[in-house]
Image 1: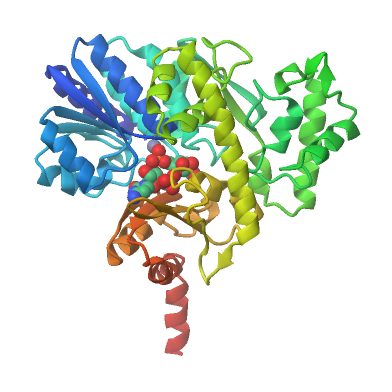
Image 2 (image 1 turned 180 degrees about the horizontal axis):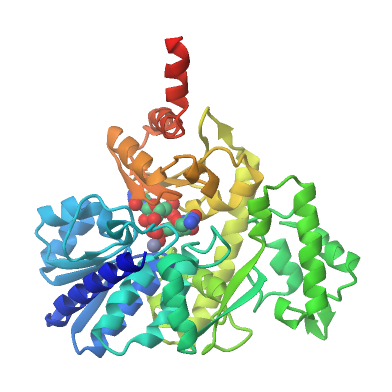
Length: 468
Ligand code: C5P
Ligand code: C5P
Ligand code: ZN
């Protein structure tokens, strides 16, 4: 691992040197928390180096977007995307560097991607952290490490072990040493800094808390049952509780989850490392990496990337206020999305399960909803979600760590199957996405069910038994 990191740092330096030679650079990035933080790290590193720069946000790097970028004829820095579209970038001869962590479809000498160094891009290095590795080779950019950690948490890179691992962890150590971030063992739920505890519990869907998730009365009774006052003048937040109260809540949640038959790994994820941004004010969304990243998702995934970007660049007034309003809207959409899935139900095929949200869940958040529905659904099969988007059908897929260990690789599966039906897909082993033509969903599901079966070795078993 050490030598892999060393090789990566060499590549980061090469990429940084190339960037420093440019007079003008266009940063092109993804619209989620990891993309926003990656893009804002890149933009700040360029500005500090005196390089003229601009930024462009994309839902997806497709042929049309690549055409648009090629037309600009400016040196480009792709962050948190690009590796899956190397063929299109080469075809249009776009001069560029790439800092990404999606499964690469090919090689490129100015690409910093963990997969090229045998490092897992879904847990060990986020797009933002890969971008930070280049930024720190461009000058005195150590303060940007906080954004790198927010992006990593936003991509759920800490979900496997309840803490950041791999290269992310090495970067975290730097962040702690520099006094930018603290890692604290605590409950890993959203809203510890800002929400009344009862709301924090009520709005938790991952894991789904039996009797509490989506149920205000249930959340109140849960807390009252433990003798925990809901108010002390104002509503009490998690950070206002005593250690004993926190411990009582955690033990009771663990008991409820055991009773509901959840797997050990799901239950273990309740508690783990959480990341505090020491330069942010306590009691704000920005203090906790998980809340910060959700705040960012609430902006760019709804077309308000300018607001998310401004917050990343340090705005704590107007943009921050607007982002908080958008966050309320995002939380509402997520909880309505989950209720919708409850209503329409999840269909099971042999090796996968799916739902089709049509126009009722935004294509940019349907993947988050699918991930949140997972603990309540069958964890033995990857979950596939469809939603309409103007250009076709958006597909989002999520697996569990256990399924990945058994051979599931969603990026490979979605890439291959989307291509078969005339679409495009990619991503990570545990989470991937695609866009496919309208009307090809049934065919897509049929092929995907077979491919996932093959990844799990099911077809081999069939072959072996049919040899007898
Ligand atoms: O494009 P990008 O890599 O930023 O998107 C990653 C997506 O995959 C996020 O929505 C995240 O929720 C999901 N993911 C996941 N589990 C992981 C890594 C990523 O669900 N271990
Ligand atoms: O949109 P969603 O959160 O489901 O995306 C999951 C992962 O799949 C992300 O890493 C995203 O970048 C990737 N993806 C992709 N190609 C698409 C759609 C999503 O590589 N057409
Ligand atoms: Zn990412």
